[in-house]
Image (cartoon, rainbow, N blue to C red; front, side, top):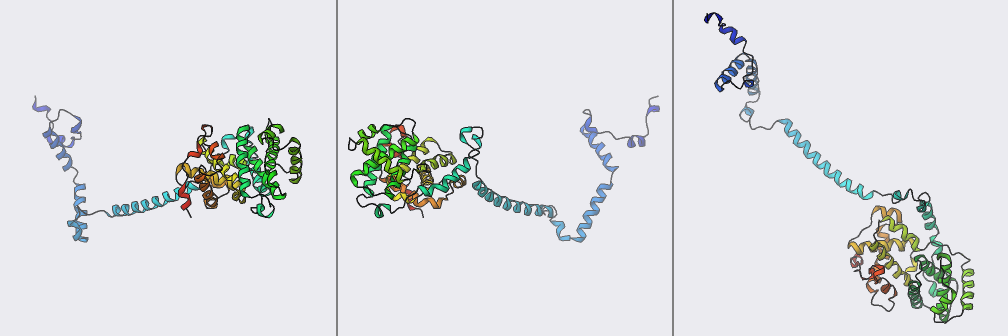
Length: 377
């Protein structure tokens, strides 16, 4: 009875199609026998492999010995292509560095919703300032051609004293810059004796206060600040003479208006701002700086301040775009500023240095000057 249910051996061989790996109960010997049976029933791949091998051996007998160690051709092509990609990527990285430097940021995008920022008109406003700033400049030789009783040193003493008066009266920054501009434009057109030079200074500050300040100091305040060297009527008469000589052209772009804009372009912090104003106020005292335009003075002050704080040259494409000055154009003025900074605390005129040595102005005057700029070409 048991022998009647046994299948023929040929039927067993033909029906072996199961995967022995799926049955954990098969022994290793059983799995090996099964794999041998499956391979024997599919001999064609092995024959094809031997045929191809013999064909390669006939065509290239030298390559047969190194077949296992030889590098396939497509691998060599791939390595060459990767090397080319590496060179291309390195060149693109260098180009990307240049592109990043040339990107110009929109400094007004954050003020789009601020009506006081006048984003819609700010570009036209500063184009007008830049166009008209030459009318506010004076000849760098007016002191020798127009004046006969005063000189550069007397002007420096006057401006240094007025900076202290401005600080004592707690006036706005715009007032100081307009005061200096009024003095220079008046002295360019009208000869003044040295006894009246201080009167010209206080009168120019009075006019600037009327134009810029909300609370204007009285004439008596200016008379007292001069230790009553002049009377009220003398101040009023000088005021009439000044505004008529200038033809009432008081609205001129000063370095201050450019400073506010250019500081925004460099995303300045308070320390950089104070140092920039310190440097440009040093320039107000120096007669040799009248040859520079207000916008150039402002840009050079900010550039010098950045070099002073960071101790390396720093002038971005954004700064160049909004100031319209390259680093090379600023170097001459910047070197003079470094010299003024270096000697600010040791000269006779130390009004600006003492002002910016206080905590109110962040002790900006005590910052080490950027002497490395003096060695730049």
